Image (cartoon, rainbow, N blue to C red; front, side, top):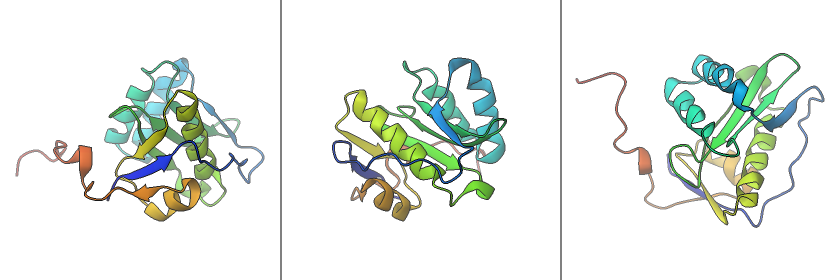
Length: 157
């Protein structure tokens, strides 16, 4: 998967999720362990590690989507590298409701407010979502990009 480039000065407006009971907001410091555990459960340890790092930024560079009781999605940036957006994920049974779009555009608008002109979506997949939602374009020669020497959790072969 290639990285993708987003012009932060040319973003669409942030929509509201199709479900009125969904709230999208910046995560708070006291929620760190809960968010990280949720990301491990529904996605991966690597994504959770990046989410954990996003909590070390000031302001916190992690956004969550939740109902009254449950997290349903998240988006982090400035974790693996400055200006790098990701990971982003919405649990499978909540996809198709505009939650990912809202999370992505909220995080990108926040990056713009922090002074970034561009964002790089790291190892973007699915590319069509990022292109359609944020007008992202692939960066030639960026696969596997910054993740090229990532340690494998499987150990030596």
